[in-house]
Amino acid sequence: MAELDQCFCPNEKCKDFGLRHQGNIAIRGKYGKDKSRDLLYCRTCGKRFGATQASALFGLHLPPETIRQIIHHAAEGVGVRATARLLELDKDTVNRVILRAGKHCANVLSELLASLELSEAQLDELWTFVKKRKVLAVPKTSKKSMGGPGSGQQSMPPRGC
Image 1 (spheres, one colour):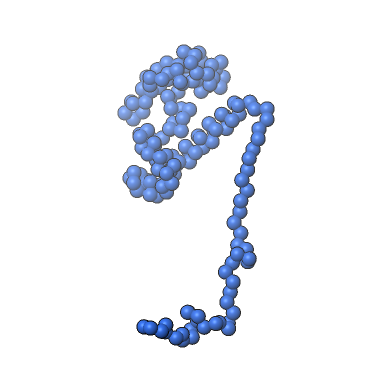
Image 2: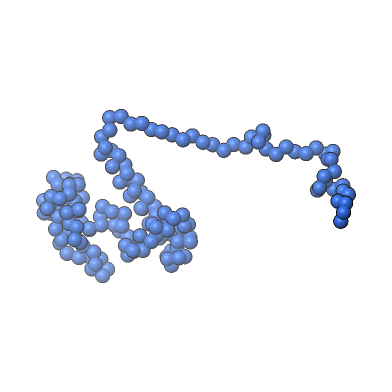
């Protein structure tokens, strides 16, 4: 992990909790099935944690590129089953990644909106609905038809044929 300045201590009891660029985060070692993930620790409180702990990727046993592809497919409107077939994954795995990413995005957005500290806000709304109205519906024809095409009555062929 080259971006240690972007990491922060996840320990709520630490005085550097949630603060970036403090110089208190260091690499402690590697972990994971193939020892490819960084294990970090906070020099202030001594807590160890994974480099991806505060992200939507933490705890998922998929490569980051696969997770990126799943999220990309979801953003493009591809269904869960189709994404699972395209990436050769189980549909429950795809669904789990999408739900986790959505929850993470909602948390991030909530924190960002709360950090704005606005004293006043203007909300614009768009209200719309679709309703079947009798005025717009096609009028029903009466049983006494005029004898046009499709009425069941024979019509005269056009002259000149």
